[in-house]
Image (cartoon, rainbow, N blue to C red; front, top):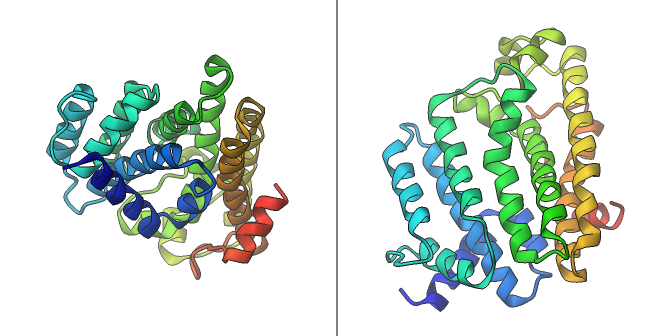
Length: 274
C-alpha cells in the first residue's frame, strides 16, 4: 500500500470514529495532522481488539511485534504503513506504542483495579502513552519537560473517559473506578448495574472529577512548550473533555440515562473558556 493511501485511510478512521479527536487535530498543519491520525488509528485498532467479546490476545501480540520492527518493512496494513512513515518524520518513542499494546493486554487479563495506583498504571499505558507519542509530533521546545506533562494530560483525559463510559464498560464486564474508592463512598457494583446515581454515587464521581481536574491543570503546563497550532490542538482536546466533565457535574454525574456529549457549539464554548 502506498503511503498517501495509508494516510487517507487513517484520516478517514479518525474522522468517522473520533469526532472529539478529529475536532482538535484539524488545526494542525497537514504533516502533523496525518501523523497524529496514524497514532489515533493505531490506538483505535488496539482498543477494538481488547474490547472483543473474546479479547484477541494473539493479535495484540502480533501488533506488538510489528511495532518493534517499525519503521522497517511494515506490511500492507494501512495503519502500520502510515505509522512507519510518521516515525521517520517525527521522533515518536517506540516504547510509547508498545505501552499502548501492553495496556490493551491488561484489558485481556483484568476487569477491576484495587486502587488509583493500580488504575494509574493502566491509564499511563492506554492514554499517557498516546499523549507522549502525540507530543513527539508536536515537537515541543523541551522534550524533557514536555514528556511527563503530556503523559499527565493523557491521564486526565482517560479519567474523564472512565467517568463518561461507566455504563459501556459495565456492559463489557469492566469496572475501572478503583475498588477501594467504591467501598469508601459506599457504592456497590449493583448500583452501577442498576444505574443508580444517588448521593453516594455523586460523591464518588466528584472525587474522580477532582482527580481529573488536578491532572489536567498539571498537564496543561505543556502548552507554553508548543508552537501556536499544536497548542491550539491540545487546548481543543482538553477543552472538550473539560466540557464533558462540566456536563456530567451539571447532571449530578448521572451517566446512565444519557451518555455525555457536546454539540459543536458547546465544543467551541468549552475550548474558548478553558
